[in-house]
Image 1 (cartoon, rainbow, N blue to C red):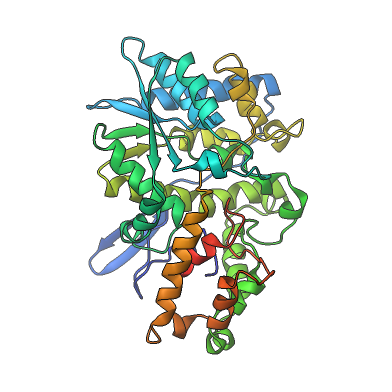
Image 2 (image 1 turned 180 degrees about the vertical axis):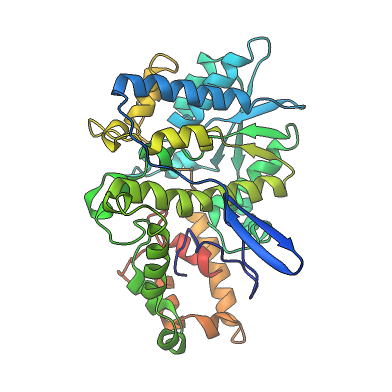
Length: 408
C-alpha cells in the first residue's frame, strides 16, 4: 500500500523475518547474527569526454553480454523491439555466428485492434521486432496470450511471487516464461537500462522530477483514504514513505545527497529496479527458466554512477548516451525508437473480468478486505459513472484496471 509497485527494503511477508538486502551478507555464529555490506557505489572523479564515455559504455556492456552467454545449455533472448532488448539481441547474435539465435516476444490477444497511443506507450512492437529479426537473422517466436490467461495467471503469479506484485504484467510474464521453458532454460533480457541510463520519465519530466519522495509513487493521500477508517487513525502512509526515503538517501555521502541525479539513480537502484528484478526472477524461476540481465553488471553501473546526467539525457532524448554508444550496431529506427514499457493488454475484456473478480470478493462480508480497506472507496472505483479517475499506482495502465487487480 505504501510503496507499490516497489517495496520497503528488507521487508518480508512474515512478522519478525526480514529479507537480506542486495550487496549484503549475513553471518550467523554462536548465536549471534552479523550483517555486512560487501559492495556499494563509490563517487570518484571522472573526466571522460562524451566520446570517451560512448566507447567505454559500448565496451563494458558488450563484455557483460558476452560473459552472460556462457551456458551449458542453449540460450535465447527476449526481443521487444525496444532499444535495450535489441542491443542485447544484437551482441548475442553477432557472438553466435555459427548458430541461429532464437528470440521471443509477447503480445496480447487483439492488442492491435484495441491499442491506444499514450504519452508512455507510443507504438506497438511488431514492426520493430521484425526489423531486428531480419537484420540479425534470428528465429523469432511470437507468443500471444489470451485475455482469459492474463486473468487466470493473476492468482498463479501471486503464489509465484510470494508477495503482492505488479498484477497483469506479472501474470503475463509467468505465462510467457512457461512457454519459453518448453524449449529453453536460459534467456537474456534487457532490464535495468532505464535505471542507469535515465530512461524513466521521472528522470527528466519536471512534474515527476520535482516530487519530494519516490517519484513513481502516485497519490499517497488517496492511498491513505483507501485504508479502513480505523486503520487510517493508526497508520500514516506518508510518514512511513518519508522515513524509508530518508533512510535510503542517508546512505549516500553528504555531497551526493545534494545532487538530484545521484539521488534518483540511487533510489531507482535500491527500490524500483529491485521490484522489477524480483518480478523477473520469481516469475521465470517458477517456470524453471533462468533470466540474465547484462545491464545490471557492476562494472557498468559503477562507471555510469560517476558520469554527468547530461550525457545520459540530451537533445530531449532519454538514454541518449546508450543510443549514441551503439550507433551503427542496430538499425536506426530501432536505435532511436521512443521508450515503450513492457507490453500491456488494451482489450476491454480484461477490465471487465477483473472487475467481476473484485465484485465477487466484495460479496464475502467476512473477507479481510473489509478489515483493511475503505470499501466505499473501492465501490466508487467500480462505479463506471464516477468521473473520479485517480490512479494510485504507477503503471503504464491509464484506467482503473490495475487498481482492481491490486485489490483482488
